[in-house]
Every structure is written in structure tokens, then in C-alpha cells.
Image (cartoon, rainbow, N blue to C red):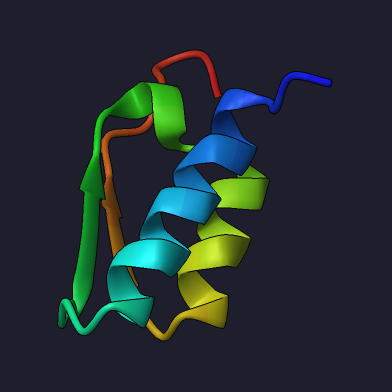
Length: 56
């Protein structure tokens, strides 16, 4: 079963933090400005810096 793009991003962040890469921020474009991504950043104590879509 293929993962969704937000699930892949969450996995990449988790792996990066797990191998010792330190981060305080998660910077992304409007495609990643979703509730699951924002929740993931909060779970990992990251500050999300996201461009929001004009229609939202």
C-alpha cells in the first residue's frame, strides 16, 4: 500500500530527528499547510513556517 505524501513527510522528519539532526523549524510551501502536517510538527516540538493557500 502506497503512503500518502503527508505520511511520507512525517516519516522523513521522524527519521531525520531520530538520527540526530537537530531542528527547531519546519519550513514548507503551501502544499504542506495541512492539519496533519501542522499536527506532526507540534508532536515533534517544531515551529511550522508555512505559506498558506489564498483560498483557505
